Structures are given as structure tokens and as C-alpha cells.
Amino acid sequence: MKTFFVPAILALLVACSTQTPAQQQTPTISDTDYETVRNLKIVSFAKAYEEQDTVLLDQILHDTYQLVDDGGEVYSKRDEIEYISKYGPSYDSFSFEILKLEIYENGTATVFGIGTITGTDISGAYSQTYKSSDVFVKEGERWRAITTHVSGVKETRE
Image (cartoon, rainbow, N blue to C red; front, side, top):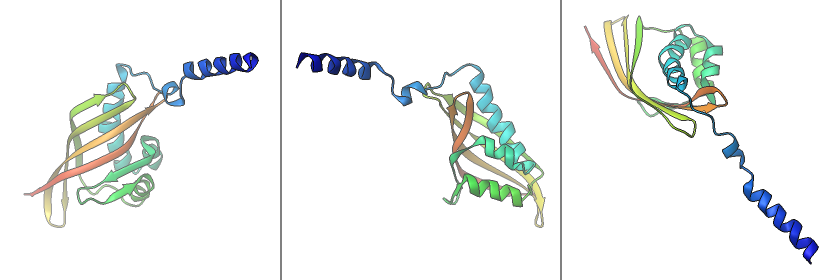
């Protein structure tokens, strides 16, 4: 009985002291992560849509990505990549102002801000503003968007 008891206790001690996969994968957060996430939201997202760059968008969006638009419709990563491959931008300019960016020790980041789109269509010049919140996750050294929620779209006409 004693010969079974000692290995069983050793196995239990090893199991208790071993990190779980989730603990082993917790990324290290650095000061440069704020700039990386800011750049993804302000520069890379805009570039991917403006240039119809499906490769860049594929790199930005996590495989589980979902977009919820202002009407409550839900779109996947595949939907977004397919959309930009077919439709170029119909606006003249786009900008995004980050109002709040938080990075958490567990490797997630939240971004909240206001987007502004200006352009001209068949009805004339317009300007749209909207609010959006995004969640990013850090896997290894790479940040990727897992969700975007858009609301409060307002349009003005000149």
C-alpha cells in the first residue's frame, strides 16, 4: 500500500504545481501595446477598407471575429473579407477618434471612440458619425480584433 501511496502523492503535487494551458498562454503586456492597438484601430482598419486589402483585414481580424452593426445585424470575419473584396469605399474621407483605450493583464483590450465619414453621393454631400467599441485579444505578440459594435449612426446633409 505504501508503494502506491508515495507515487500517488507525487503525481498530485506535480499536477497541482503545473500551470494550466490558460495560465501558460497569458501574454505579457508592454507599453508598446497601447500604440499597437491604437494603430490597428486608427490606421490598419481604415487602410484595409480603403484599399480593399483582404490580406491585411485577415491579419487584423481574429477567426472568431463578429461585427454588430447599428441595425443589430451580425457579420463574421468571412462576411467582412467578402464585403471589402467586392465593394470599394464610397466615401471621401474617414477618421476615427479614440475616446478610451484600456488594456488588461489577461491580454484583452477595449477601444471606444467616434468615427466620422464624409462623402458625396447622388443626393449630395454628407457627413456621418457613429460610435464604436472594439475588443482585441493578444495572442503571443499579436493583437487581433474579436468583436466590433457600431451604434448611434447620425447623418447630416449639406
